[in-house]
Image (cartoon, rainbow, N blue to C red; front, side):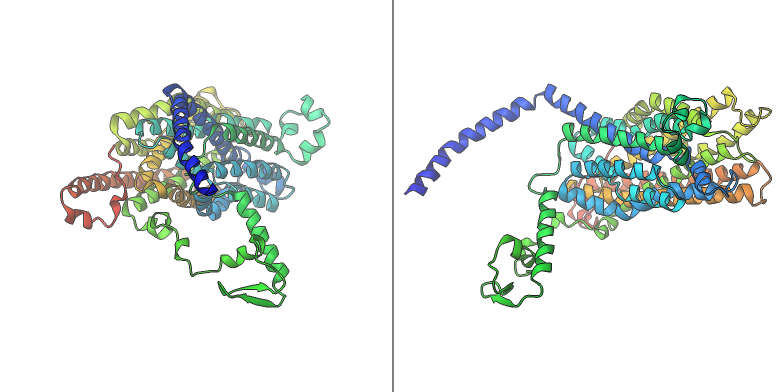
Length: 565
C-alpha cells in the first residue's frame, strides 16, 4: 500500500519537475547565453591549442643548440640529425598513444583527455628542461608526446559543439587551429630569447643572480618553465569554460574505473592462493570464507560471457579496420598524414638552414626567433580570414587545392635569402632578409592552416558522429608518425647535403628545400584527386536517394552525408 502511494506521488510530481527543468533549459539557452558559451569555449580551447603549439614548436629554434650542449663533440654542420631526433621523439611518443587517446576520449570524455594532456605535459616539460644527458632529453621528449592526446579531442569537441552548423564550425576550427600560428608568433621568440641566457646576456641581472649556476647547468630550462605555465593556465580555462560533449549515458568516470581496477587487482592478489567453492547460481568461484561483495566479485563478473547484453551496440564498434575500409575516410587520412610529414620537414629544415655557416645564414637562436616571430605576426593577421573567406568563396576542396599549391612548394624560395644577405658580416641578418623570410614563411604557414582546417572538417564528415573521436585518434596516430619521420628525414637530408661533400656550398641547403618542394607536388595531386573523388561520391549520394541499387553499391559510405561544400 505504501509503495503504491509513493509511486502515485512520483507520477504526480515528475511532470512538474520536468516542466521546471525544461523552463530552466530554455532560460539558459537564449541566444545571448549560447553565444557567450560558444565564445568562452572557443577561448578555452584556443588557450589549450596555444599550449599544444608551444610544446611542439618552441623546441625547434634551440634543438640544435641543445644537442651541441649535451653532446660537445657536435658542431653546427653535423648536428642536424641529432636535432631531428629531439624533435622526432615527441611525435614518436604521440604515435604510440594516439589511437588509445582516441578510445579514451570516447570512454572518459573529450574534456578529460584535454585536461589529462595538459596536466602530464606540464610535468614532462619541466623534466625535459632539466635533462642532464642527451638520452634523458630524448626520453622525456618521448614521454611528452606519449602523454599528448589533445589534437584529436579538440577536433572532436569542435565538431560536436557546432553540430549541424557548418558556418560556426568553420569559424571555431579556424580560430582554434589558428593557435598554431600564435605558437609560431610567441613560441620561437620566447624559446629563442630565453635559451642559454648566461651565454646570450652575460651581464644581465638574471645571468648574474642566484640562479646563475642552474642556468649554466640547464641552459634551456626557462623555455620549458613557460610551457609549464601555459599548460596550467589552459587546464584551468578548460575546466571552467568547456562543457563535456560526450553523452552522459556513454561517459565513464575515470576515477571510478580506476578504483574498480584497484579492487580487482587487490582481490586477485589476495585470494588467488585460497581454496575456492563454487557459487551454485552462476558457477563462479569464491574463497570459502568470503561472502560475495562488489570488491570480491567485480573481477569475476568481468570474465562472464553468458550475458549477451554486455556487448556494445554496433554503432559503438568503431575499429581501425572499419575506418580504413571506408574509401573516403582513408583518402582523407592519407592526405592528412602526408601533409603532416611535409610541414614538419620544413619546420625542422629551416632552423638548420639558419644555423649552418657553410650552406646557410649562420645566425643565432634569437635571430631565428626574430624570423619566426615575424612570420607568426603575418600569420596572425591573415590566417583566420584566409580560412573562413577561402572556404566560403571557393568551398573546402577548392580551398584545400589552392592552399596546397601555395604551401610546401614555397619552401623552394627560402634559399634565395642567401643572395639577399650576400656581403653581410658573418652572423648578421639584414632587415630586408628578415622581412623576406618572414613573408615567405608566413604564406607557407597560412596555407598550411587552410589545408589542415579543410582536411579536418571534411574528414570528420566522412564518418558518423559517434565515430569521430576514434577516427580523430586514428588520424592523430598517422599524423604523429608523419611528424615523427619528418624531422629525422629533414635532419638527415640536411646533414648529408651540407657535410657529405656531394654538393658545393651553399647548394646543399638548396637541394634540401627543392626536394621538399617537389614532394609538395604530390600533395597537390592528392588534393586534386580528393576533389574529384568527393564530387563523384556526392553525385552518387544524390542518385542514391532515387535508386536503391546505387545505394547498395556504395558499401556503407552513406552512414552520414558526405561534405557538399
